Length: 331
View 1 (cartoon, rainbow, N blue to C red):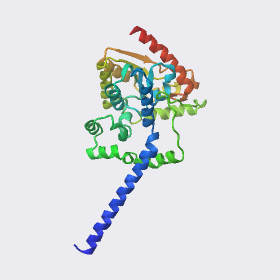
View 2: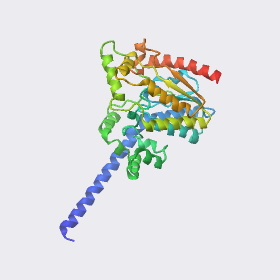
View 3: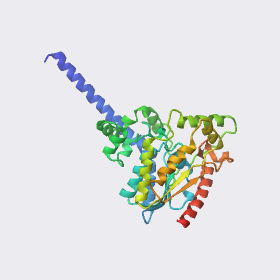
View 4: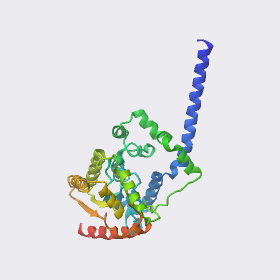
């Protein structure tokens, strides 16, 4: 072997060693500085803390959904409740979370309340950026073989994303580090809930915002993802197998948002017929509560066109608590 080849091998080995060292160094800081303040970690800590405060491992009302629930369901108003809602949630994640709560944490749950909004089962919820994207977190709950099958990723890719979080976060790495070191905002949580400030603007911008939000949810998307629907059914069956009552809830939205869905020809009737059929085919123990139009005349209750603000969340949760108590008495 001549000197040039030896030098090439040596330089290549040195480069790879330095590259790997840099990768592990950045990953270490990402895990120690960014992930502890990630909303999934904060929610998990909040849940574990709440669980440790209970005399008995029992949650009467377990709420699962996306940001509509995360920001809209105030557990201050609903005794024995915990809000498991997370932004960009989907029913694949919900199924495995509920399975973890019931089978690993051994928590007794009386009611599972599932979000059933227009966007809850769309293909947007199961695209690559949302479908088990945070593998550093979800590999603790979802079996490895299931992750490979659901995501379609190779085993090596799943392993890398699970144990080297910066690989999965590479698109947002700079932003994540910026927020961690210079502009850190850690959400305050109460039993999983985080309220939003602000209110809808009283001008034409709200109509534009409503159309933009509708396009974000549904443009170039199908309103029902087969994968999301399949895991919705699995979630309902899991609840039924554990003798848990399922309650579907349609969250309040603003009138401009509802108008925008009509303008964009979103087929609500067909969608809900499919969702309710999936519910009824998998359990006989269910209720459906529709609050979607409840606050059409109260724009001051909304932070944006489809999310309640702090005041709206409190008022809505009090109403929901009353209805849940009525259901509890009749069940």
